[in-house]
Length: 206
Image 1 (cartoon, rainbow, N blue to C red):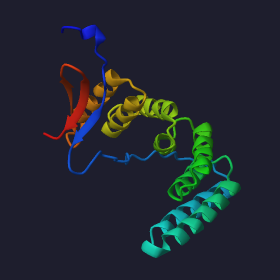
Image 2 (image 1 turned 90 degrees about the vertical axis):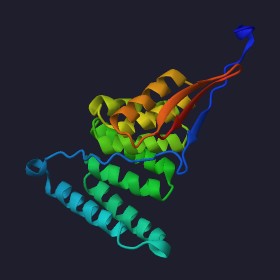
Image 3 (image 1 turned 60 degrees about the horizontal axis):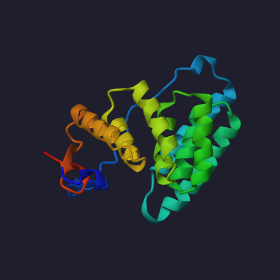
């Protein structure tokens, strides 16, 4: 430990896997049964949003851009018909994010979360968009909220770990990676590596 007070701690994350980091989207549904209370416009908006969502999956390849444009138009119609529907704004946010209209997508995700603060899909979608936009503090808040809502979801911990690395909080990042691995062994196992000049957090498959 000679001259240890003069050493600079450099922190990196190395993923020893051929397929790269896992970017699993949580597959849990966050549904509210409000059918008996919904207005006709709200019901129609959900029907339009559902149909548009199905249309997005019909064709691939060269038609993808056209499908996205049609989906955005359909979801916009749904959101206009039911401005108080968190699901409608979330669906539009998803389509806008896929089309790389990030600022507009962020607005729609935020509207969805404002209308329903516990809308898990909107929180997750916004967290991933914020990561892409380097809005790491907001991504951390959304993922922390999701973990409070559903503490047993490994992907939430893994994604928050990657955000914490960006925020230079290595200890907490390690804990989240470890928790993700404990919950689901398909996630890489984190390891702390030490040498004379640096501390490294790495993950590897076992």
